[in-house]
Image 1: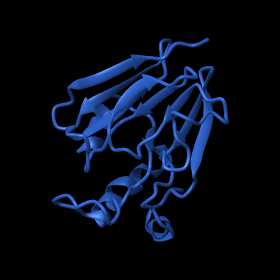
Image 2: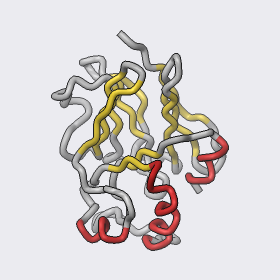
Image 3: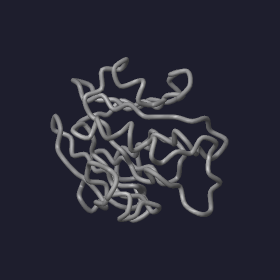
Image 4: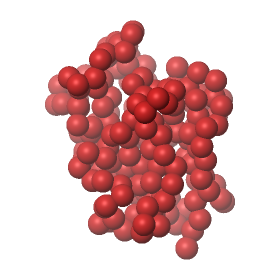
Length: 170
């Protein structure tokens, strides 16, 4: 369902923040859990995907996915902002700024956030499309890198914006 928003929102890139095919033994499998179906949906989009490894991802996942998914983090610069992507289980977004990032995307908690930490780093978590926690609905995030970059969290089923933050540049 999240992929249905790609064209509607004119997305040119997809950030996948870990736990792509499985959510671990401590979590119940959501109804309709279909790892092969996820592979089939993501494979045609491989050229648009930047993915990082979650704590529940394994080498076998890389064997079936057509894009790299086992890196602990990804980083790049875009429009003068340094972006850092990590699942969040190895690098805590509230304690970690080793790479001096301006924007930190993570997903580990399955709880959406759009805020800054004590170092002024924007900590952005889209929540979870399939296993949200903290009483939250299924959500996805949208990062817009334009003149005034912003990040917003949207309800998966309705598309309603639930949280947003404008990213200020120094």
